[in-house]
Image 1 (tube, rainbow, N blue to C red):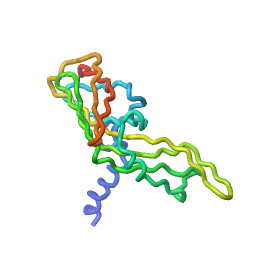
Image 2 (image 1 turned 60 degrees about the vertical axis):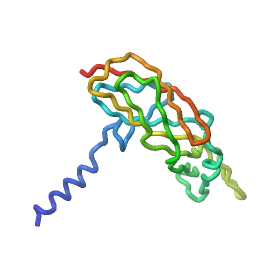
Image 3 (image 1 turned 90 degrees about the vertical axis):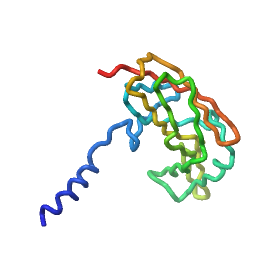
Image 4 (image 1 turned 45 degrees about the horizontal axis):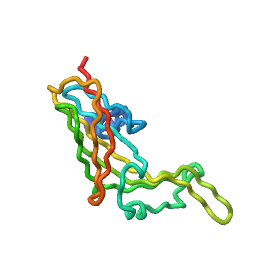
Length: 173
């Protein structure tokens, strides 16, 4: 009986282990679109970028469809809302040789920054943003490159938006 519980216990304890940043489940968060993605030959990394709406043009419909739930409050602040953006496409160019970038997942969001409540109303301030997770892979034979500014073209099927992505291929230790 006790031996049959061991696999379940190991699975449970494994779920509690810290996740490695830069993996598919916990992508490394780049603080600005100008942050450098450092990658080694043979490595795959996941990075998250959050763009202001002005950087990535998408149809108004996608943001208008985001409804803020004023009853969804945490610590006195109305929670942000986001929807999966499976319609967003990515094309990468000017990449270092042997490096590939693809869109892993994307979302449009209204990120709440302030909530004010009175007896009669609740007022929320928010930013409209596009959040993306990129899968960045380098072939095993990718050459070291100090810095390359690649171009990412995002498209909602109507409008294209170009933004830079800085990539550095570093030799493995």
